[in-house]
Length: 220
Image (cartoon, rainbow, N blue to C red; front, side, top):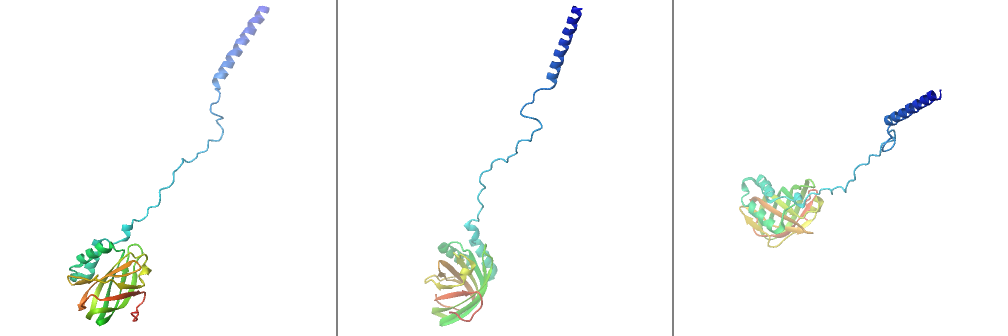
């Protein structure tokens, strides 16, 4: 009887050991934390400083010699011989213009004269602006004229800065192929009128031109 009980006890012991091993193999220990926990935060990758904003180059604000010559050819038409030489001459002294005026003017003189004109100031980065100009002239200057006028403008800081008086520069007159060029300046701004038209104005006069936003008969 004792032998039978020992045999049953040994059998139950073996069965219990086998069941524990099977349970241990069916439930492996968790790895890396509980599976039902919240996922780790998804942080964005680090970023460096953003690149600086691109700024337009100074050349993008100026007109090239070819752009000025093309505009002058369209404006003056068949009487534009010598325009390229005058534009190159002005460029060699003052660089590239950042504005130019296309317009018409009338004037006359017997030693002392007057000039009145109107046109449009063109710029690349500040829009276009209608302008009027007037002024006296003194010198060896006789005759009358009605002229198409192109004015190259250098170092213009803002379109409104054109509204002031520009004084003629002595010795800046050039005449090539039916066109005449002089130069005027004020506050580091240089205005170079290039003119052609009917009539006759002799001499390199010394005077000034005053730009205004509206027409006026007062040249002073």
